[in-house]
Length: 338
Image (cartoon, rainbow, N blue to C red; front, side, top):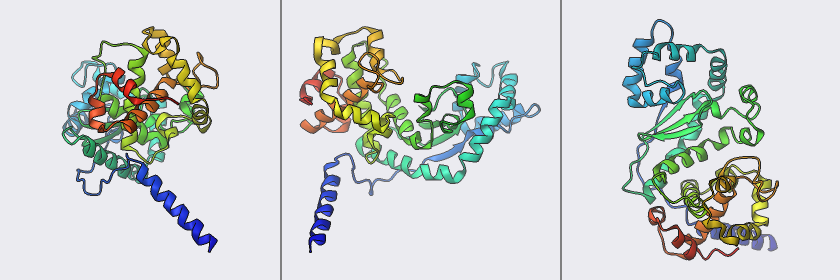
């Protein structure tokens, strides 16, 4: 009898917790076109000394202007029509380290593994349509190698995934590049979908045109971005969304009141010292101005807590949140008091 009661209580708690997750919206009736998966790295590595023109034309037919943007980001050329394009692309596709990295990508990121990622991304698109019915949706997932330049991008309705940035923390090429452990720790397939969602939201709701440059601005802006990412991935834990370890996450939970005190005291939120702001929003092993135990990008974590409090205490949709430019209003109406 007692076992039945306990089982019933557990079931109720599970149901209650599900209902309390307001971001876990019903997307069963939302129709979107599945993302078209395009493996650009496979097309690029068919380029050789004697077929640059013909293969390039085929790639341009498939990928359009995206290909020119792609090669310009790491070949430092003005696109496929540049006079130095041919030797640059051949050098890239025949470079020993790039070829070795491509071999690892082919071995690890099989069609089967990519197909496991697709449902999550397609559900992200559905949730985005639910919250933002009038905005454009991604149409393609383009995988590629970027020469270890970037992990993700969102351009021209394409989610772009740099697979050479997700080969695991023991990848020999990361060691060769002397990438720090705090960075390589989350350069694996578990962080692909959160990374793509973050890159999409940062691009979709870009704030580069803002003339405001205070700690408050950056704190609330990134709080909104991470809240939107959480809306696209409601079942993902904050450790995956923020690239935090369990220890770092637990630190934030334990010292939330102290962390907020640091931001609130001495009008620190209204400082516009660029160096001081970057100490609180940049990646790194820790936030040194607070302590060696404090996780990096702590302003973003605080911002997420403020925005969550704002959404909890106000009848506001996600679309209205992202459109709200008065960040002081968000702070005031959040009633955030840890």
